[in-house]
Amino acid sequence: MVKNMNIINLTESEKSALSSIDESELRILIDQALHKEHSGDFRLLPLSNCGPYVATQLDRFERSFREYRESKSEKKIERTRTYAIQSGKDLLFAFNTMKNRMKTEEQERQTFQVDDNIFPPHRFSQKLQVTVSYRWRDSIEDEWAFGSITFHHEVQPQLAGSFPRPKRKFSAAKQEQILQDELFRTWEHLMSSALCSVRDYFKDGGDGSKIPSLFQVKTDQYTKGLNNYSTDFWRK
Image (cartoon, rainbow, N blue to C red; front, side, top):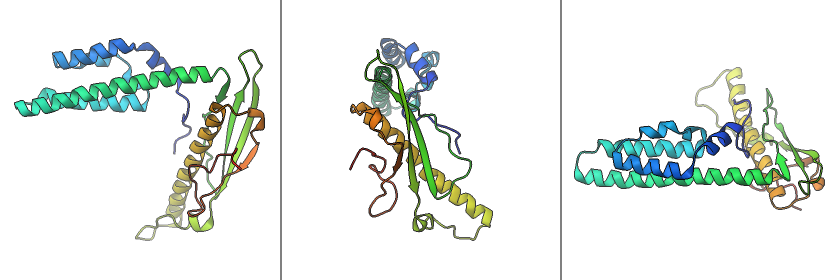
């Protein structure tokens, strides 16, 4: 299990990496790589530190570029070059998307901040909860106001008992570990949904003073589990 995770906010290392790269320089390096048929200059940029989205597109570009460089037949060279060019465009798009996200976060942090550095409990029961802390103000001239909301979700017994059972019988300790892993994934879903709900509430202009301190999540009518609206505390 992970100890904590950043769900809605970029980390300081990601913001530092994004800030250190110029978009025009990245575009030139992509073009040079395709022209000179080597991508070594990309290792000089901290692209892999710009977040999972950029890192994934970087890996895709390097793989497609390597396939293009190693191609022999004219037909394969043409096909792999086209794919490498598109991968380069996707990498540039991913970088610009994350750069814009960073700018948006910086603007939003002037009036609200949601803490997404949340640690899971050491052991899970069927009664799960996640506390989201935040601060807000009407304008940058105002003092910060602080608050938190705790989301409660009780996993239904029939749902807890519906987790996949192994074909062969495991020990009690192993069965407990399987249950704990499933409850962790449910808690992780709850945590992610709770953070996004609080963030989206503020993004839509919500008043922090109207956020309840406690909220019992609304389970899906059919599955009795969490859905996309379970943590929307402002809905009637």
